[in-house]
Image (cartoon, rainbow over all chains, first blue to last red; front, side, top):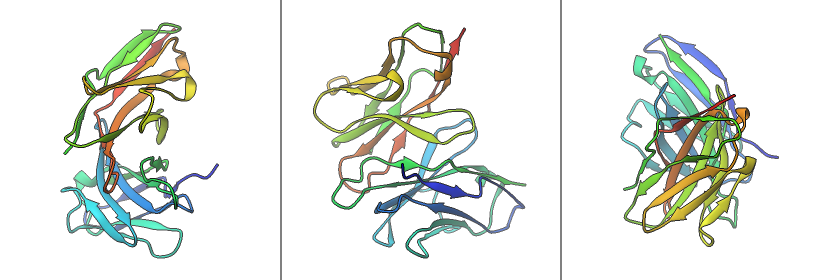
Length: 116
Length: 114
């Protein structure tokens, strides 16, 4: 069964450093998402991406965040200058096969980011 | 805008007992509803979803949920739980149009006791 994959599974970085989190969505999906979950808290929407552009973003997704689909398979989240409060589990999700509806999202296993 | 309330942060229950995890939502537009399960140190796995049609939906691992539009609820039930059901359960809602972003509840930690 196709699945969403994410790399790395864990990342430790110093405050102020740039990090890139990578995701490979399910191959025929059209909608892509990033969510984050701060330890012990709920999962929060960051951004959705469709047709090679951001379709919606939350207030969390400020100028230090960016997303990109550099090729036909990868979907990346870049944090330009990490802060301590960026420490969280980051989930990638995808949905919406062609001809279908984008309502059901399939989540990757997550990348646990720790900013020191 | 949508919001989701999961009234119970933790639910302890003995093995083989029934369980209900409560979820209420608020929305000014039509919604899809979902339950996801998160086992320790793992990602989110879809348990079940309500898109349309029958208000009683069945999912994996013996779980089911009932959509109640008048009460804006989507409670999750299982008639007999197992130790392996110990996990965090998240209710989520999305609009039926637009970007389909999910709004999650705060989660309910189900702890099944032997």
